[in-house]
Every structure is written in C-alpha cells, then in structure tokens.
Amino acid sequence: MRKDQGVSGDAQRIEQLGWMITLKVLDDKDAELELLDENYVSVIPEGFKWRDWAADCEGMTGDKLKEFIDSELFPALENLDVSSSNGQVNR
Image 1: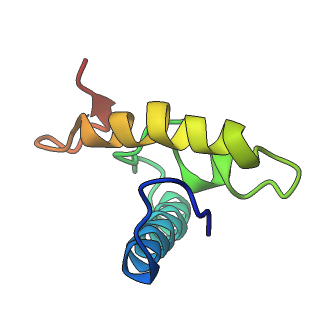
Image 2: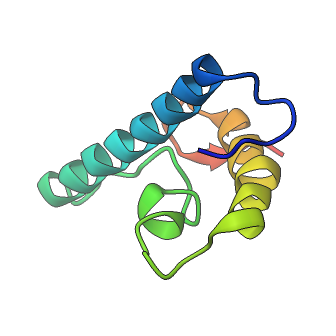
C-alpha cells in the first residue's frame, strides 16, 4: 500500500484494501452473470471494470494508477445511476 501524505496508518490501508477486494469481487460476479445471461448488463461502465484497469500485470502502476483511481474511477462509480440497473453514469 502507498504511504502517501494523508494516509494515517493501517486502518486507512485496510479500508483501501477493502475497496480493492470489493471491486474485484464485483467484476468476478459480473463475468459470471455475463456467461449465464446474454442480456445481462453490468452497472459498472466499460473502462471502469476491474478487468479493464487492474487485471493487466503490465498495465498502469504508480502515479498513473493513483491518478486514474482518484480522478476517473471513484468519480465514475460515485455517479452511477443504479436506480434502473442500466449501468449509465450520471453526468
């Protein structure tokens, strides 16, 4: 885990790890549902699914990854419209 300014110890790192695990589990469940139901549409838009940004071991790392998570991923997830399960981001 990163030791950035503002990260106040293990409790905050555990919270970060919890979010990472949650996003991975959601992506695994989406992949399973996509196999079982051809009409299934994930609420998480393309580009923000775990498999799109974290699954590639040659993908983003360091500051580029942090910038993506802080500036793109979390704002996109925060603005998801899940009221109708349509997977669209509110802008």
